[in-house]
Image 1 (tube, rainbow, N blue to C red):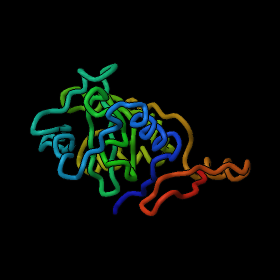
Image 2: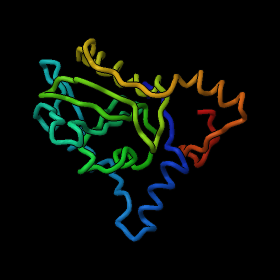
Image 3: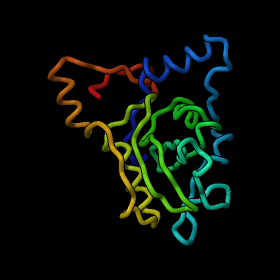
Length: 179
């Protein structure tokens, strides 16, 4: 594992997924490992983001954006929210290194933001996707970065000072987190 990861929020993430199921709908469909390939984002020899052999273009997504997640090994998955409804779907509710929304025009990353109600990632987590893209040769220097919240260390310090803990879903069950 190359990047630090964090689990989905128990109440805001897992609770939402369970509530969708209990409301009589189909629930949140989780993708199994063998179902993720169509959503895998790769980088072309010309340093452009691709998916399924074609330049990625998020113009058909809500507000021209797609949701994305990155796992701890740097694999990035993305889709329109009309196709994959929640960030938790991509990795079957498992931990992510980054989660948010992005706008991509014909393979060029234009903007990125860290909004994810299921994971609520601190800034330093979602910024890891930019490190991975740079490592793969993508120029991220002109990308419009829209960040909410703070870095995990600052959030942990503030949460601890206020006696606040968060329940996150980890590989071994629910864990207490300061962010």
